[in-house]
Length: 218
Ligand SMILES: [Zn+2]
Image (cartoon, rainbow, N blue to C red; front, side, top):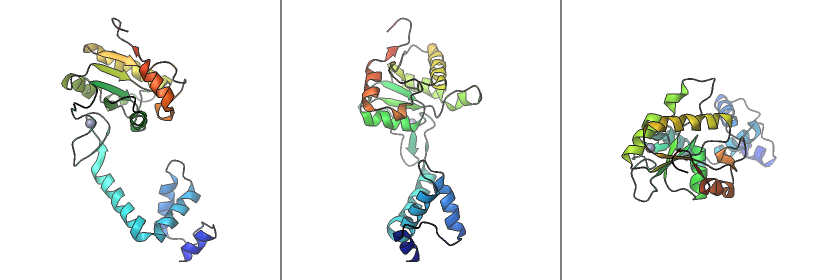
């Protein structure tokens, strides 16, 4: 109840030095958009709602930690208990694979409803400073998926940054060994623009006006 009255007063300093709480504040402060003040507010809310929030959150975090990881084939998130719903063959999906840098990009494109095919999540971009990354991009698996899932087009949807475009070029080059149509999202993506931060209109237009990269097609 002491915590609650502090909450009501708008004073979020805990006044107490509890190791567990301090550790939690440090961790929550590292989350996007949250600083120590928001972290304290969140923790007070959790502690004041032990059964309804704190306990299920702790259990759910533990379950996510144990059971959810990147799929080794497509790079998207999957539950260990289920087949990957992104790369599993489905008659409901287009025979196309959209290559994005990260899962946030996948979620953005999915919520725009412009694309109902498969995704391939690179988990980053190639950069000059890190030569180890090429294997992490799961490109062998991308080629395997193209063959196995009867894919007719690979759409490169990396960011309009130098790293994003370098990565797109590298993937395009890697796909030359198989006969597959490769296209890239249209210009109109703002330079430096990350897919995740695009509005639906820009994204839809970039998909609709995507450019073929194969010499023999457009
Ligand atoms: Zn998968």
